[in-house]
Amino acid sequence: MFLPCHKDDTAMDTALLIWNRLISWTGIFTNIISDRDLKLSSALWTNLHQLFGTKLSFSTAYHPQTDGLAERMIQTLEDVIRRFFAYGLEFKDCNGFAHDWCTLLPAL
Image (cartoon, rainbow, N blue to C red; front, top):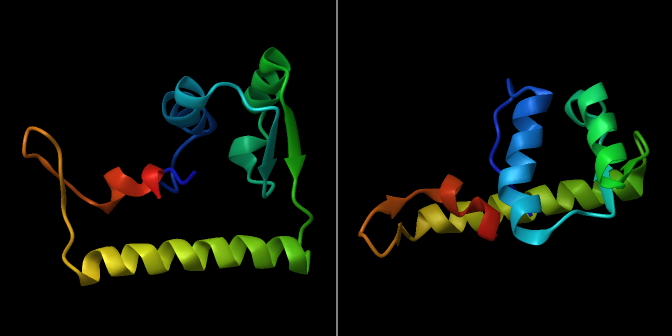
């Protein structure tokens, strides 16, 4: 699942985003794979993993297979978003409120 976030988000911001957008909808994960981002390897995340009983795995730095999979996923996401804008697609909810691609990102 893709979640929109900001570069200046803290570990707590990231934890709340994952809680509100993922865990509250799907339940607790057994394993999370991270790219060694400090936001996901901080003391906060270590404590959350212990609390929930989840395992945090890190991808291997500069590993061609892992890097290739991640890059391909990013390329696919960019293609979908590009097509979304190319066709001028707009999602409106039942109240007629228009949403942008950022709102729809978790559904991709």
